[in-house]
Image (cartoon, rainbow, N blue to C red):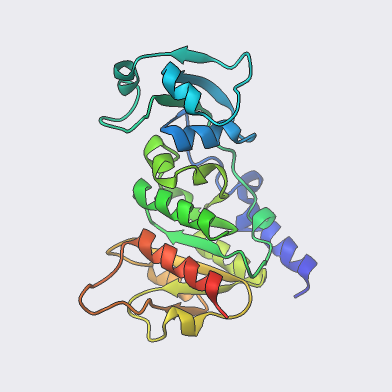
Length: 263
Protein backbone atom coordinates (compact mmCIF):
# COMPACT_ATOMS: atom_id res chain seq x y z
CA UNK A 1 0.00 0.00 0.00
CA UNK A 2 1.36 3.42 -0.92
CA UNK A 3 1.98 6.02 1.73
CA UNK A 4 -0.89 8.19 0.48
CA UNK A 5 -3.25 5.21 0.65
CA UNK A 6 -2.22 4.50 4.23
CA UNK A 7 -3.00 8.09 5.09
CA UNK A 8 -6.49 7.77 3.64
CA UNK A 9 -7.06 4.55 5.57
CA UNK A 10 -6.32 6.32 8.83
CA UNK A 11 -8.44 9.32 7.98
CA UNK A 12 -11.46 7.25 7.10
CA UNK A 13 -11.66 5.04 10.17
CA UNK A 14 -10.65 5.17 13.82
CA UNK A 15 -8.31 8.12 13.30
CA UNK A 16 -11.09 10.47 12.23
CA UNK A 17 -14.29 9.11 13.71
CA UNK A 18 -16.94 11.63 14.72
CA UNK A 19 -15.24 14.71 13.35
CA UNK A 20 -11.78 13.24 13.44
CA UNK A 21 -11.08 13.00 17.14
CA UNK A 22 -12.10 9.52 18.11
CA UNK A 23 -15.17 10.15 20.19
CA UNK A 24 -14.15 13.70 21.10
CA UNK A 25 -12.79 14.99 24.37
CA UNK A 26 -12.21 12.40 27.05
CA UNK A 27 -13.20 14.88 29.73
CA UNK A 28 -16.27 17.04 30.14
CA UNK A 29 -16.31 20.18 32.22
CA UNK A 30 -13.27 21.93 33.61
CA UNK A 31 -10.03 20.32 34.73
CA UNK A 32 -8.08 21.29 37.83
CA UNK A 33 -4.37 20.67 37.76
CA UNK A 34 -2.01 21.09 40.67
CA UNK A 35 1.68 20.95 41.45
CA UNK A 36 4.51 22.95 39.87
CA UNK A 37 5.38 20.63 36.94
CA UNK A 38 1.80 19.98 35.72
CA UNK A 39 0.74 23.61 36.14
CA UNK A 40 3.86 25.03 34.54
CA UNK A 41 3.57 22.65 31.57
CA UNK A 42 -0.11 23.55 31.12
CA UNK A 43 0.66 27.27 31.23
CA UNK A 44 3.27 26.81 28.50
CA UNK A 45 0.97 24.72 26.32
CA UNK A 46 -0.60 26.96 23.66
CA UNK A 47 -3.31 24.33 23.10
CA UNK A 48 -4.65 24.83 26.65
CA UNK A 49 -7.42 27.27 27.40
CA UNK A 50 -6.89 28.53 30.93
CA UNK A 51 -9.61 29.80 33.22
CA UNK A 52 -8.01 30.70 36.54
CA UNK A 53 -4.86 30.18 38.60
CA UNK A 54 -4.97 30.03 42.39
CA UNK A 55 -1.52 30.36 43.92
CA UNK A 56 0.57 31.48 46.83
CA UNK A 57 2.88 34.40 46.08
CA UNK A 58 5.88 32.19 46.86
CA UNK A 59 4.77 29.52 44.38
CA UNK A 60 4.28 32.08 41.60
CA UNK A 61 7.97 32.94 41.94
CA UNK A 62 8.95 29.32 41.20
CA UNK A 63 7.29 29.28 37.78
CA UNK A 64 9.48 29.38 34.70
CA UNK A 65 8.53 32.38 32.60
CA UNK A 66 6.20 35.31 33.02
CA UNK A 67 2.41 35.12 33.03
CA UNK A 68 0.49 37.51 30.77
CA UNK A 69 -0.44 40.78 32.44
CA UNK A 70 -4.17 40.04 32.34
CA UNK A 71 -3.92 36.39 33.41
CA UNK A 72 -6.64 35.56 35.99
CA UNK A 73 -4.78 34.92 39.25
CA UNK A 74 -6.19 34.69 42.72
CA UNK A 75 -3.61 34.68 45.50
CA UNK A 76 -4.43 32.32 48.33
CA UNK A 77 -2.98 30.65 51.38
CA UNK A 78 -1.87 27.01 51.39
CA UNK A 79 -4.85 25.97 53.51
CA UNK A 80 -7.26 27.63 51.05
CA UNK A 81 -5.70 25.81 48.10
CA UNK A 82 -6.09 22.47 49.88
CA UNK A 83 -9.86 22.91 49.67
CA UNK A 84 -9.70 23.15 45.87
CA UNK A 85 -8.01 19.80 45.24
CA UNK A 86 -8.22 16.16 46.27
CA UNK A 87 -7.49 15.40 49.91
CA UNK A 88 -3.77 15.57 50.71
CA UNK A 89 -2.94 16.39 47.08
CA UNK A 90 0.60 17.86 46.80
CA UNK A 91 -0.45 21.15 45.18
CA UNK A 92 2.83 22.98 45.97
CA UNK A 93 0.95 26.27 46.16
CA UNK A 94 -0.43 26.11 42.60
CA UNK A 95 -3.90 25.12 41.35
CA UNK A 96 -4.89 25.78 37.74
CA UNK A 97 -8.41 25.46 36.33
CA UNK A 98 -8.50 24.97 32.57
CA UNK A 99 -10.42 23.40 29.71
CA UNK A 100 -9.66 19.80 28.74
CA UNK A 101 -7.44 19.39 25.71
CA UNK A 102 -9.08 18.98 22.32
CA UNK A 103 -8.93 15.60 20.64
CA UNK A 104 -6.13 14.89 18.17
CA UNK A 105 -6.11 13.11 14.83
CA UNK A 106 -4.45 9.70 14.93
CA UNK A 107 -2.91 10.12 11.50
CA UNK A 108 -1.43 13.50 12.43
CA UNK A 109 0.93 11.87 14.94
CA UNK A 110 1.23 8.19 13.92
CA UNK A 111 3.42 9.00 10.93
CA UNK A 112 5.35 5.73 10.74
CA UNK A 113 8.61 7.03 12.23
CA UNK A 114 10.57 3.95 13.46
CA UNK A 115 12.15 6.05 16.21
CA UNK A 116 8.77 7.08 17.64
CA UNK A 117 6.70 4.11 18.84
CA UNK A 118 2.98 4.24 19.53
CA UNK A 119 1.68 3.01 22.90
CA UNK A 120 -1.76 1.42 22.87
CA UNK A 121 -3.53 0.85 26.21
CA UNK A 122 -6.37 -1.65 26.46
CA UNK A 123 -8.64 -0.74 29.37
CA UNK A 124 -5.91 0.71 31.59
CA UNK A 125 -8.10 2.84 33.86
CA UNK A 126 -5.90 3.84 36.81
CA UNK A 127 -4.97 7.54 36.38
CA UNK A 128 -1.66 7.00 38.20
CA UNK A 129 -0.68 4.34 35.67
CA UNK A 130 -1.78 6.32 32.63
CA UNK A 131 0.03 9.38 33.95
CA UNK A 132 3.21 7.39 34.53
CA UNK A 133 2.96 5.90 31.03
CA UNK A 134 2.61 9.39 29.56
CA UNK A 135 5.76 10.38 31.42
CA UNK A 136 7.68 7.38 30.02
CA UNK A 137 6.27 8.10 26.57
CA UNK A 138 7.71 11.61 26.78
CA UNK A 139 11.05 10.33 28.04
CA UNK A 140 11.43 7.87 25.17
CA UNK A 141 9.99 10.09 22.43
CA UNK A 142 6.86 8.07 21.72
CA UNK A 143 4.58 9.45 19.03
CA UNK A 144 1.42 9.14 21.14
CA UNK A 145 -0.66 6.95 23.40
CA UNK A 146 -3.95 5.48 22.18
CA UNK A 147 -6.84 4.47 24.43
CA UNK A 148 -10.48 3.57 24.01
CA UNK A 149 -12.57 6.47 25.24
CA UNK A 150 -14.94 4.43 27.40
CA UNK A 151 -12.23 2.55 29.30
CA UNK A 152 -9.64 5.16 30.14
CA UNK A 153 -9.46 7.82 32.84
CA UNK A 154 -10.31 11.44 32.10
CA UNK A 155 -7.83 14.25 32.41
CA UNK A 156 -7.42 15.06 36.07
CA UNK A 157 -5.07 16.53 38.61
CA UNK A 158 -4.06 13.05 39.78
CA UNK A 159 -3.20 11.91 36.25
CA UNK A 160 -1.39 15.15 35.40
CA UNK A 161 0.65 14.97 38.60
CA UNK A 162 1.76 11.41 37.76
CA UNK A 163 2.60 12.53 34.22
CA UNK A 164 4.78 15.37 35.56
CA UNK A 165 4.04 17.65 32.61
CA UNK A 166 3.83 14.96 29.90
CA UNK A 167 0.03 15.33 29.63
CA UNK A 168 0.75 18.59 27.79
CA UNK A 169 3.41 17.22 25.43
CA UNK A 170 2.46 13.64 24.49
CA UNK A 171 -0.54 13.36 22.15
CA UNK A 172 -3.32 11.26 23.68
CA UNK A 173 -5.61 9.72 21.07
CA UNK A 174 -9.01 8.49 22.26
CA UNK A 175 -10.89 6.23 19.85
CA UNK A 176 -14.28 4.56 19.82
CA UNK A 177 -12.99 1.22 18.57
CA UNK A 178 -9.51 0.12 19.67
CA UNK A 179 -9.43 -2.88 17.32
CA UNK A 180 -10.14 -0.64 14.37
CA UNK A 181 -7.40 1.75 15.47
CA UNK A 182 -4.97 -1.19 15.56
CA UNK A 183 -6.01 -2.10 12.01
CA UNK A 184 -5.33 1.46 10.94
CA UNK A 185 -1.90 1.39 12.57
CA UNK A 186 -1.08 -1.80 10.68
CA UNK A 187 -2.11 -0.17 7.42
CA UNK A 188 0.16 2.75 8.27
CA UNK A 189 3.11 0.35 8.55
CA UNK A 190 3.27 -0.34 12.30
CA UNK A 191 4.18 -3.77 13.67
CA UNK A 192 1.81 -4.32 16.59
CA UNK A 193 3.32 -6.15 19.55
CA UNK A 194 1.01 -7.21 22.39
CA UNK A 195 2.74 -7.52 25.75
CA UNK A 196 1.74 -10.59 27.75
CA UNK A 197 3.51 -12.90 30.17
CA UNK A 198 1.99 -15.86 28.31
CA UNK A 199 4.04 -15.20 25.16
CA UNK A 200 6.90 -17.46 24.10
CA UNK A 201 9.12 -14.76 22.59
CA UNK A 202 10.74 -11.92 24.50
CA UNK A 203 10.25 -8.35 23.36
CA UNK A 204 13.84 -8.17 22.11
CA UNK A 205 13.19 -11.19 19.90
CA UNK A 206 9.91 -9.80 18.58
CA UNK A 207 11.06 -6.26 17.77
CA UNK A 208 11.39 -5.42 14.07
CA UNK A 209 13.49 -2.62 12.63
CA UNK A 210 10.52 -0.53 11.51
CA UNK A 211 7.68 1.35 13.22
CA UNK A 212 6.28 -0.33 16.33
CA UNK A 213 3.05 -0.12 18.31
CA UNK A 214 3.37 -1.51 21.84
CA UNK A 215 0.03 -2.82 23.15
CA UNK A 216 -0.51 -3.20 26.88
CA UNK A 217 -3.51 -4.49 28.79
CA UNK A 218 -4.87 -3.70 32.22
CA UNK A 219 -3.24 -5.20 35.28
CA UNK A 220 -4.74 -8.52 36.25
CA UNK A 221 -6.99 -8.85 33.20
CA UNK A 222 -4.33 -8.18 30.59
CA UNK A 223 -5.28 -7.60 26.97
CA UNK A 224 -8.69 -8.68 25.81
CA UNK A 225 -8.73 -11.62 23.40
CA UNK A 226 -9.99 -9.49 20.53
CA UNK A 227 -7.13 -7.03 21.02
CA UNK A 228 -4.58 -9.88 21.01
CA UNK A 229 -6.07 -11.00 17.70
CA UNK A 230 -5.26 -7.58 16.26
CA UNK A 231 -1.56 -7.82 17.17
CA UNK A 232 1.11 -9.07 14.76
CA UNK A 233 3.11 -10.69 17.57
CA UNK A 234 2.94 -11.33 21.30
CA UNK A 235 5.95 -10.79 23.51
CA UNK A 236 6.98 -10.82 27.14
CA UNK A 237 9.58 -9.14 29.28
CA UNK A 238 12.20 -11.58 30.63
CA UNK A 239 11.43 -11.05 34.32
CA UNK A 240 12.38 -13.39 37.15
CA UNK A 241 9.97 -16.13 38.21
CA UNK A 242 10.13 -14.69 41.72
CA UNK A 243 7.50 -12.13 40.69
CA UNK A 244 4.40 -12.85 38.63
CA UNK A 245 4.15 -9.61 36.68
CA UNK A 246 5.12 -5.96 36.52
CA UNK A 247 2.95 -2.91 37.05
CA UNK A 248 1.67 -1.83 33.63
CA UNK A 249 3.45 1.52 33.83
CA UNK A 250 6.75 -0.23 34.60
CA UNK A 251 6.18 -2.62 31.71
CA UNK A 252 5.51 0.33 29.41
CA UNK A 253 8.72 2.08 30.47
CA UNK A 254 10.85 -1.03 29.92
CA UNK A 255 9.19 -1.73 26.57
CA UNK A 256 9.82 1.82 25.37
CA UNK A 257 13.45 1.56 26.49
CA UNK A 258 13.79 -1.68 24.51
CA UNK A 259 12.46 0.03 21.39
CA UNK A 260 14.74 3.01 21.87
CA UNK A 261 17.87 0.88 22.28
CA UNK A 262 17.25 -1.86 19.71
CA UNK A 263 20.16 -2.46 17.37
